Amino acid sequence: MNFTVAIVGRPNVGKSRLFNRLAGKRISIVHDMPGVTRDVITRDLDDGYTLMDTGGMGLVEGMSDTPGKIVNAVEGQIDFSIDAADLVLFVVDGREGLMALDKQMAERLRRGDKRVILVVNKVDTETTAIKDKEFYRYGFGEPHLVSAEHGRGMSTLRKAVLKLRDEIVGPPQEPEDDGKKVLKVCFIGRPNVGKSSLSNCLVQSDRFIVSDVPGTTRDSIEMPFVWKSKRGEDWHFMLTDTAGIRKQTKLNSSVEYFSRVRSLDAIRDVDVVFMVIDAKEGPTNQDKAIAGEATKANKPVVIVVNKWDLALKAWEDEEIDGFDSEAKFREAFEKGIHRELFFVPGSPVRFVSAKEGIDVEKILLSARQLNKRQGRKIPTGRLNNKLYKMAERLPAPKKDGRRFRIYYAVHTGNYPYRFKIFCNQAKKLGDSYKRFLLKGLVEEFELDGCPMVFDLVNKK
Ligand code: GDP
Ligand code: GDP
Image (cartoon, rainbow, N blue to C red):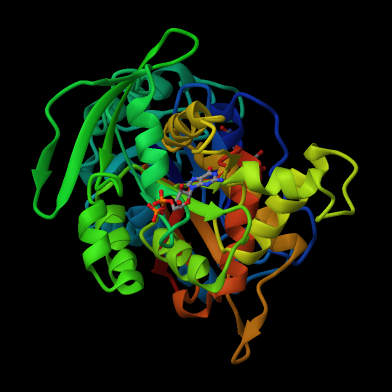
């Protein structure tokens, strides 16, 4: 669970100084270019939470803003922080005392549902007179008297933040060990690509141990098994709705329609999908439709190119030319698949032969890797820096005169990855820009083959 702490306060109370202090480094968070706002600045701290400064929101660095504009901006910052953060550090200036704007902010924070720590800054020495005892009346608990400039009161403040984190979301946890997890898998694909043969190939292997009696749930058949890997590990699986078991049903049905629908039923329930493609035919239009369903269901896909024995033979017989090694032939094949079928970037492609029993263990290995890869925690600061850099390099195209813009994003879930994205206009995110973002995140966090869901939240 990510924990985000927002620093809010009117201009000049010392938010940037405090941010740098807590982040433990003298990082310059001055905007790179004058006149450009970097709305929200985030850093992942070693303490295991994310610090966020919204001080730039709604204001343009280096420009003199009117008091009215400042009030609007600050109110926007507060609303945003209440939405996006788990804890708010409300900073006021101990030497100046409370200004009207501080009071307005306090009211807004009190109406929000987030925990607040009141930080009275610029209390540089023991004897610094605190101008306003009103600080105590806000109901935010005992105020923390600090000096961001000199580091006074920082360790107490840090401890208070960690204590509240543990109260609100619990202490950080180690990722779950998936060793014993039973992975649900299924084979999907057009008729005759080899789904039954692959299932049988698994079942007949001496590494396949039926771990339980196969059962029927609703209209799918489930076959639990343990695979003894070559390295001696036990891998637990549940093969759902295997084509092998249901061969008769298939023969009785109006072939294509039924096989499609059956795939859809199976997809919903599984952790990883094996999408089987016939090596001799390459990806066809029907493959595209089936692949699209897996993608729509946000399931990770292992692409299984079956009948590779036939493709290899054709290559050896020089029916296929232009490749001077099998590796190059494979590479070209793989590229073609990724071009034709809209999968998540980096979906693994495995070349197998059910007939000759080649590389079947590898598809199970890929399924396990893919599943494990979906369980990571994505640090908020790095996530936002990446999104920011991508937007800087390639801003979203304008739609009806406005551009889609991201203010802030946070990782909220796994299996599949979910990201809550605060943006200016959710409806303006087009498909191709969405793919661009997805690709960037896959690269940055090495999430090859992991589907992602973006939950967009509109902010003015
Ligand atoms: P922000 O606009 O809230 O981000 O405020 P800054 O961090 O930019 O600080 C505004 C001014 O207050 C700067 O000149 C800082 O040097 C000064 N300042 C910040 N913290 C302290 C502090 O603890 N003591 C004193 N004396 N000055 C401070
Ligand atoms: P399904 O309809 O997807 O379940 O496909 P099947 O498993 O019934 O296979 C269709 C046909 O392809 C059968 O005649 C299989 O013998 C053949 N077949 C399956 N896998 C392979 C393979 O790896 N190599 C070759 N040469 N033939 C295969």
